Amino acid sequence: MSQHSQLTLLKQRRFLPYFITQFLGAFNDNVYKNALVILIAFQATQQSLNSNTLINLSAGLFILPFFLFSATAGQLADKYEKSHLMQWIKIFEISIMMFAAIGFYYHDLTILFVALFLMGFHSTLFGPAKYGILPQHLRQEELMGGNGLVEMGTFLAILLGTILGGVLIGLTNGGLWVSLVTITIAISGYFSARAIPISPSADPHLKINWNIFSETWHILKFTRENYTVFQSILAISWFWFFGALFLAQFPNYSKVYLYGDEHVVTFLLALFSFGVGIGSLLCERLSGHRVDIGLVPFGAMGLTMFSFDLSFAHIAQTNSILNVAQFWETQGSFRIILDIVFIGIFGGIFIVPLYTLVQQRSEQSHLSRIIAGNNIINAVFMVASAIMAIILLNAGLTIPQLFLVCALMNAAVAIYIFTLVPEFLMRFLVWIVIHLIYRIEKEGLDNVPENGAAILTCNHVSYFDPLLIAGCAFRPVRFVAYYKLFEVPILRFVLKTAGAIPIAGIKENPHILDQAWKSMDAALKNGELICIFPEGGITRNGEMQPFRKGIEQMLKDNPVPVVPMALCGLWGTFFSRFGGKAMSHFPRHLWAKIGLKISNPIPPDQVKATLLFDKTLELRGNWK
Image 1 (cartoon, helix red, strand yellow):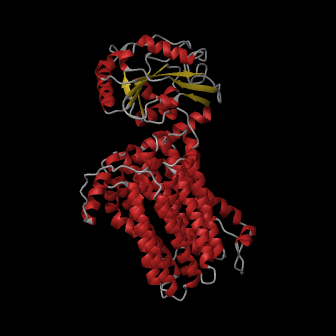
Image 2 (cartoon, rainbow, N blue to C red; image 1 turned 120 degrees about the vertical axis):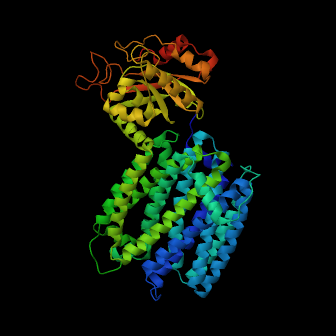
C-alpha cells in the first residue's frame, strides 16, 4: 500500500469541504473570543471586576456548554447524517454572530458574554460530528495524517483568528468590523458544509435522551468501559487544562511582564498556535503514517521542559509599552519566543496520537458519543483550569509562578497516566532505544493487519529482537518468549508491559507451557497480535534453525492469518551470540544498519512450518 503525504487529502472532496468547515468554525470562534479578550484587557479597566477575573471568566463561559450539552450533541451526531447536521449548526452560528453584533453596537458586555456562551454551545454541537465523521471518510492509514491536518487547521485558525480579532477590535469602530467579519465567516462556513459528502448515520435507531444530566452520566459511564480509550481521554483533557490555562494568561502576561501592547498578545498566541500546527503535521512523519502512542510521552516531556523554562524567562525591564518589533529586539525575548513555540510543537505531538487512538479503538456506532464524553471531561478540566487560575492569582501568585505550577503538574500527571497506561511509556522508550542504537530499515509494515487477530513469525537473532519488533509495529504485539528472558532487566519491562507470554519446553516446565497455550488461545480469540519465534531459541551461529510445528497446532483452534517477518543485520551485534555469550563483550556495531522485512499474510489453511521457514529465509537473504 502506498503512503502519500497527508497534504494530498486537501485535494479530495471527501476531506477538503469538511476541513474548510471546521477551519472556519474555529477561525470564527477565535476572531470573536480574542476581540472580546482584548476589549476586556485593554479597554474595560473601568469594570468593577479586575481584568484577570474577567478574562478567566470568559474562558470558563466558553467552555461551560461543553459540560452541559455534550451528551445531547453526541447523540445527535450518532443518530443523524452528519453533513446535514453540520449545515444546521452553521445556521445557528450565523444567528449567534448577529446577536453578538447587537452587543458590539451597544457596547454591552453582558450581551457579548452571552454570545460567547452561545458560541461555546455551537462548538459543543459541532465537536462530536467533527471527529466522528473522519473514520467514515478516511482509511485507517490516513487517520493520523487527517487528525494532524485537523489539529493544524484548528490552531492555524486560532493563529489567524487571534491576529484578526486583535487587529479588528483595535480599529476605529472595531466592534462593527468584528461583527461584519464574524457574520461573513459564519455564512462561508454554511456554504462549505453543504459540500461535505453524505456521512451515513452511525446509529439511526438511537432514541435521544433529552435529559442532559442523566445522559451525561450515561455517556461518562460508557466512555469508561474501554480502559485505554478512557485513559487517552484523560490525557487529552489534561492537555486542554494545560493549554487553556496558558492561553488565558497571555493577555496579562504580555501586558504586565513583557511590557507589550495588545499586538504582543496576538503575537504570543500566534506563536503557540503556529507551534501546535507544526507539531500536528510532524506526527504523521514521526509515526510512519500509523498511530504511534510512543509520541505521547515525548510530547509530555517537551511540554514540561519548555513550560518550566518559560516560568523563569524574562525580558529587560522598560518603562515604555513595546510593540511586536520592539519586543522582538528586547533582550530575553528570543528565549520566551522559543519556549512558546516549542510548547505548541510538543502539544501537537502529544494530542494528535491520542485523538487518533480514541477514533480507532472506540466502537464506531458510539464514536460520536465517546467524543462527546471526551468533550465533557475536557470541559470539566478547562473550567477547573479557569477556576484554579483565578484562585491562585488572587492568592498572590504571579503569572510566571502559575506557569511553573502548571509545568510541575504536567510532570506529575504525565507520570500518573503513564503508570496507568504503561503502553504509552513503553512505546516511547523502545522507540528511543532502537533508534539510538541502530539505523533501521523497515519494509512491508503495511502487511501487518490493521485489525483482528494474526500471528507474526520471525527468525530469532538476538535478545534485541522483541524490542525491535515492538518499536516498529504500529499495533501492540504480544510476544511468546522464553520464560528466562523475563530475567533480563530491559526485556522484562518491555515484555511484561506488552503482555508477553512466557513459554518453556515440555520437559523444562510443563506448567508454564500449558499456561502459554491457554494465554495464546485467549489472545487470538480477543483479536490480538501474537509474535512467535518458531526456531525456539536465539541462533548460535547466525544461521536459521528449522521452524518448529507448534504454530500448526495453534492454527487448528484459531485459524488466523500468519505474517512472516525477517530480522536482518543483527548477527554480530552486542545482543547476539556472535563470538559466544550475548552481551558479554564490548558493544559493537552500534549505529549499524539493520532491517525488519515483512511479507504478505498467509491464509491459515496454507501455513506449514517449512513454508514459513522458506518465506523467512527468502526475506532475510544473505543479510544476517
